[in-house]
Amino acid sequence: MTHGATGRRPPKAIVDNELKTVPKVRLYVERREEKQWFVHVGHVTDRGRWRTEPHAHPEYGQLIFVRRGRGVMNLEGSSVPFEGPCALLLPTECVHGLDYEYDSDRWVVTIELSYLAQVNAKLDELVRLWTAPRVISLVDSRDGGAEVYMLVHRLKKEAESEAVGQFAGTEARLTMLLLALLRESRLDERESEPGTRNDTRVVERFRKLVDEHFRENLPLQDYVSMLAISLVQLRAACSSVAEQSPTKLIHARMITEAKRNLLFGDMSVEQIAFGLGFSDAAYFTRFFRREVGQSPSQFRARREITAIAE
Image 1 (tube, helix red, strand yellow):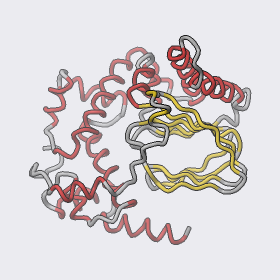
Image 2 (cartoon, one colour):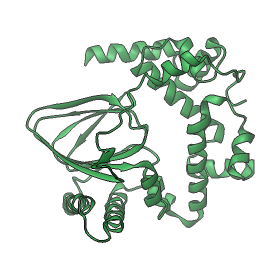
Image 3 (cartoon, one colour):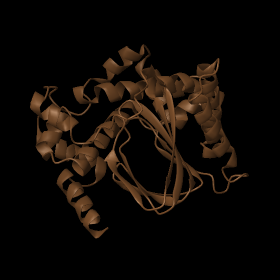
Image 4 (tube, one colour):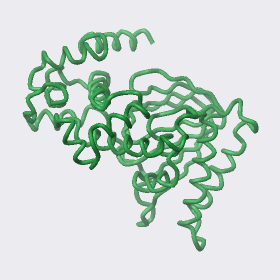
């Protein structure tokens, strides 16, 4: 057992309630004129302040190019400032809210999840780029973000065209845009070494499985079987790429979900515990305290005090 619970499934009502704690936004661009879309680019300019409440996109990755303006992103409950020119990279299910200051100019690129995975599969470093939310500053770039602006503009034009080869052209434009951001992101150079590439793919597959099954209290060996590798290989890959053990990665995913529910929902600690596969709320509290350094109730109360102060 990965976290000491009994494995008993929580009551259906609790699971349903848990799914409603963080708003899941289905974007208005899902279908455009009865035509299946894969990439949508929108241009937004605001004279006044613009704010969105914390939410997640369950089926999309999103890239926001802030050409001009500044603001603060509420990222999983933490405040992350940003200033244009910059790019905000938001993987699927990432809980975020955005508070733009006055006179912002931004381009919002929304990418359907399976299509994004197809594009990322071309380069291991692109997979790494989307493993976590990022603010990629372009303030100190050689051209001040002009190249990214040009690529976003061309992507929008291609995605909306009816020209021959529009699908291939859109994929090429999107790949060039992500490659430009990858080069500006300054990922750890060690991550690009050939010896780590296979490990990167193993860890990415493992994280995907954890996302799908972390509430089920599966033994680590079940993940190993689904990956069709040995436990030694999984541990080595996680140590090389994430500098954590497989069990710690599972625990980190559970803690992220617990924090989301504490910050953005109104569920009790007991309901959150059941939703994560714990049959004992007291054990969940000890688990949370060990990982976070404070109890779930203390964590929730501290965030409420911070919100009032802000």
